[in-house]
Length: 208
Image 1 (spheres, rainbow, N blue to C red):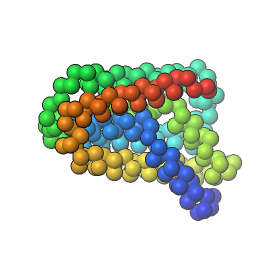
Image 2: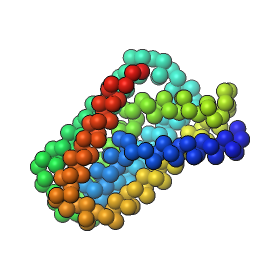
Image 3: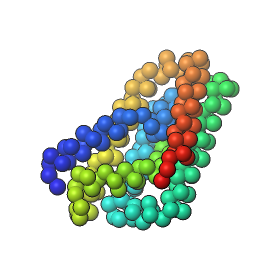
């Protein structure tokens, strides 16, 4: 491994992180619906899943999962179902338009666990994350790289993702008063639901 390879990987990973995906949609909706605390824990859940999948890939277990077609397909369809569930929930919220006024984080018990769970599950049921680590890391570290080097690259990607999502949560929280208006929330929930269902459909129709 060279520092130039590591820097190139960080640039590549940053570009990918900035492309909106299911994690972006889940963190955005949770922040707008329940505030900064739930948004932060959603981001932490996403990062925990990234770390788990990165460690799995570095340890060589990821290859076994990808090569086991029934297991890989089970993970993929679980991801499709979960994204569809979240998308339908967002559309139901938009349809009902029953939005309470924004509450402080302290007034929302259980939001941390809910946020973490949704962030973790939306990421861990996306087999493309594991495939990313398996396909991309060797391009930067070369074949036969030590496990420690693979871990360093994978966990760097997870930390970059966390930093980006926390910045997103902070920005959304600042604009929450505006974005929490009933009409705006209905549009945002409708768009978020459409995005989540679209991500699920794309995951369902992608060839493996």
